[in-house]
Image (cartoon, rainbow, N blue to C red; front, side, top):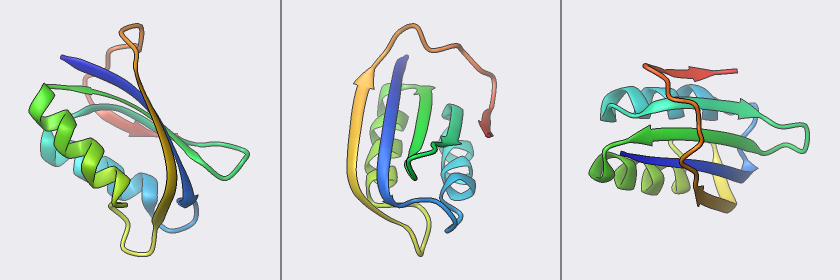
Length: 90
C-alpha cells in the first residue's frame, strides 16, 4: 500500500476540486482526505494500492474538477499518514 501527502496549487478552491477528488478516490478505491489550506492550496493525504495510486496522482495533477487547474504540486510518500476506511473532505 502506498501512502502519500500531496499539496496542489492553482485554481483548486471554489471549483469543486475537493468534491471531484473524492469522487475520483471513491472510483479507484483510494482512501484519505482533502483539505483546503489558508494559502489557497489543497492538501491531500491518500492511500491505496500502487496502480490505483498512480492513476489517482496523475488525474489529480490534471485536475479532476472541470474548472480547476493545477499549476504546481508536491508529493511525498509518508508511511505515518493515518489509515482511513474512506475518503473525506474537510
